[in-house]
Image: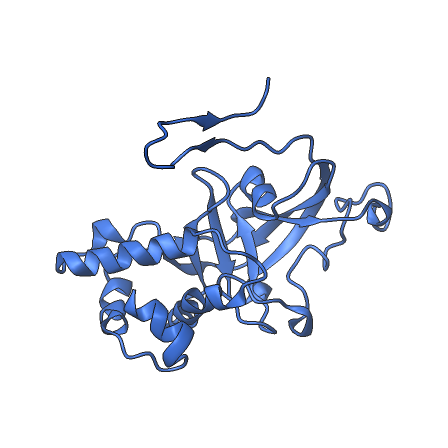
Length: 236
């Protein structure tokens, strides 16, 4: 994809690509999701056993991390993510608890603090989930936007920050057009939906609970040519 290569290796800040010329059309084509104030989402973080505690008293709704720790880290501690560059903190959360859990890629026996996050204002989100059906332009544009949707859902090695550059650029482009965040498919939970919120003051944590991961399951199908199909599944 020309846009992806341009961002990564050639012209990082002003990529010369038709995709940006079409993007405003797409923004007006129905890929807007209005979230009303009071919607509840979920955000997960790994937590060390020694940090698990009630906060304030045993009647507190926060067990595990406290209210502030449930949100995004300070900007000077923010690592690069799918939508945010390093040192710019966005708040990531999911529409359900399982997806939030999957997004932190836990191992067996890990402890995970899952917070309820509620929006405190209406949000205007750009949704990468409904791109293709809302485009009336040429087929090649549909392919481009389909690639964008795929890019936001694609698993990325957390240590390989350059792979985030195309989606970070597009998130910034969307942010500068008045959106509060982006909505995209999870790469780790089937049918899961994630949100990246540009300004975390538009949401707050209202509770947190701690879970311990009991198992992590993998399923795979062999793709080697000429060897036939073989599936790897968990032992039962």
